[in-house]
Image (cartoon, rainbow over all chains, first blue to last red; front, top):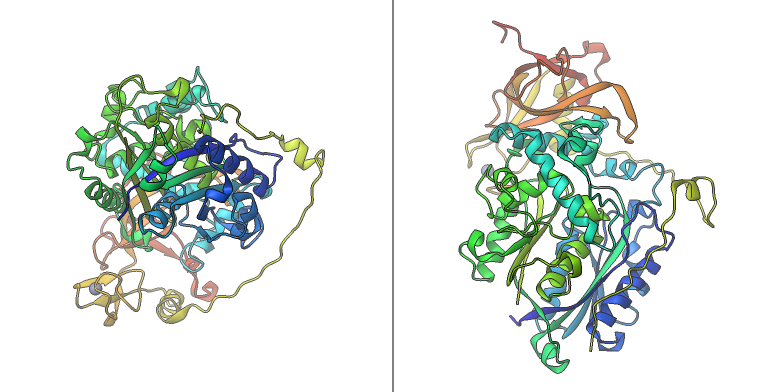
Length: 387
Length: 173
Ligand SMILES: [Zn+2]
């Protein structure tokens, strides 16, 4: 397999509602990524896009609908969709287009526009449930997170205060992100604990907001990196992905086994045998505050039940020993599902190439890991990147 | 040569802009209807619910009673072998107390919902369902519960033929 690097990235603002259409958002992010890589569309061999359920936009085939905004016109093009896992998986798809030798330079463009769906994108989420076993119970998507969070808290005897620390950290980190939707420099644990209870134990400030936005990457082979004299390529060191049983009521929700399997696949490729020592920082998927902790454990960066302790001890702060979600994450920057690639793969690229500005981790970093997670709590996509 | 992005595009709208048509827009209201054939495993499962019984499928290769029942085992990838009645009691594996309905609207009387693993099925195999006759102080993970069935004439062959799971009383099977 050939070596693959990220050589440019772009993203739009993340906001609850944006005026631009899906293809206009894609164009903005893609144009930024091309400019940041210093190339033009004619240099691109293949285009990959990621986006979540068509129902948000109300347009089936939405990958085709907005494809011209991704720079796909006249080129090999495909859309990938693995639920919330798309934010990392579309970059994995970009990776295998190049690693296989099929393309030298690829664009990866992710888009989400959740505001079109009225009165709330929750109405579309209702259609992900099993029509026979689950849907007659009229479930709200937040229920599955609440059930998983409760199981995780109960098995490890974790206090809500310790979980709230994640929301506080990420929303504060997001103050330094130019695209952030929910940054708050003054938020406290009490604010989180006193916020409205939506579905116990999930409260309003435990959750990332629905958002509109787009993000894009330029990925390149080693040959292209040399040819273009790229000064700060960030290499895709390892990738992994895995799906668990669709029978989610038959699994113990306290630990994401499928994330661990995806992580082991990525670490093996990256020749990492001790992730806690060899990974310098992480961007775990954080649509809810407990998910950051759950994913740190799934990514084998913490032992089972230990991620809250590391958080309480400050290890995961931007200047800590294992900075975690230095971008501000989904909790602070926003959660336009597939477009969260901008704060996951995008943040690893900007941090490792020294372009993260005010968010830059103050000490030397060489290797980072990120994951995205989705479907009925069953899909894990993991990427290890490094310099 | 490339450069670090300096400008971050996007024009923010408010709910008022969209709701009260202050920005140029179009609207659409889809009307889609579906009917699903319940298939081999779920048809038997639903018909047994109508009789007030829970049923699973045995995988003899894995030595497991799979519940909800299915015609093939995803782990050994062989057909399952036979139908097995299981109990209508179980254990709360996890739960939530929801103040949201399916459209994220706020409700005052919360919904108690969670996963109950069913006695007689293999370990931790269960379904999502409502809990009743509990309060936020009494409900807990590990609580033993039993199905509260609808009266026979009101059952329709649906997961809702069970109204909810309620605490198992002392000495009850
Ligand atoms: Zn089997």
